[in-house]
Length: 520
Image 1 (cartoon, rainbow, N blue to C red):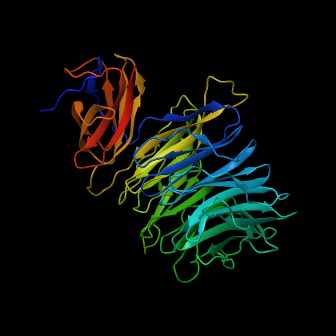
Image 2: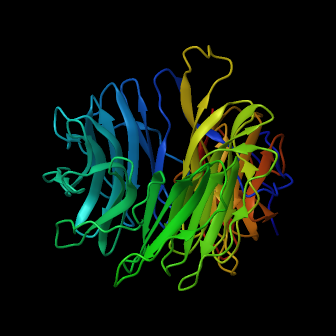
Image 3: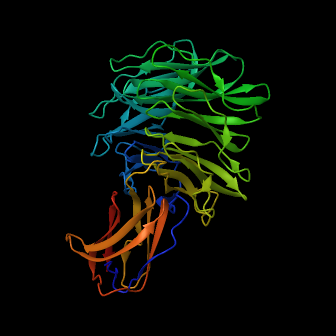
């Protein structure tokens, strides 16, 4: 017999579960002057890291596979004037954050299950550095690559970090005498790869170099042929077996196309494929690859986010629209997990409001229609995202408070979590279990939200912190995605006195999660 759950005057009633796979957004950081957009990275088991700049330095936060984000903390050694924040994370939970501060690239490494170590300046003094990128690969954990001012020209440089938080000597990755810019980087079990744009006085090409476990970068390869057409915004991904994928935008006259090239494990880069039809605008090409070698590319074309897919060993499929025609979509952020789950997130203008939208693709499935995941009343820009093998996709973006003076543009960081699930049956997973508020008075209403990786029967229980005895429970049919419980009034004979209590959501045969509730 299912026992009713009572919380000293609080009634637990299963509310209609949301049909959308997104949990409500929440604030990671309130709006403050001088805050920048977040950078997000994660791994296949669902751990994630996010970091952004503030007036006083860089702050970072971590997320466990099934839970909400921890409180942000300042990265030691970061200071005023930080910009261009980038992050990376490994499968075992190591993380790194890099940024530009007073013209130099600085970076901090977080060993697994430890705190971020003091930051180190890794670019040379006197050379203005831009656009750091972070990637973890065998023999280089992490790699930080950046664009460097070389006295009238620019180059791409990189350095590898060590477990003690220090970095080795920086190396010039792009050749002497070549103007290189806009680096991209990716890593994996075979090493790391750096991609950049080369500009030879109006002749453009995409160049790449790899670094294996033995160390040292290879001579540059050329994924794209030399062209007088402008090449912009290269992106790169690396499969576990060493297969590399690159994408970029190419201007031909008055039109722009998105191209992609493949470099197999043995051999050089293939000839580029056109992924998009020519349009006045096509930008922000991004690419991702799963453990089997299946690839996804995404970009913004004339205000519409598009995506194309390439199953392992097959040619690229046709591009298709992901965002709705009724919005003006900006450059997308793409993340792909080892299982093939994927998430796209992009800024958009909808009805005059700046919002963040996103689309999920379960492993073996297709991208969903674009969904607005930010509060339309709070302007939202610059989203980044990651996704786990289970399809759990946290997204973070920069937001501003419309009640504040727009002249100073104070901004904060918001986040929302989506659950793509899977096209194959498997144990359900509870993600992002939250109670709002988490500190209550008797009789105060509470909203409990959680996500499910797939539809499942869920048992909600409550017990005193430190005790295994369940004092109340309720069962509900949870849906794939976001679920809601409204708690108000009372039900049954069990009641919660003052103190700390634990609420657990446990799907049948799956993985549950618990949260703490304080009654005062």
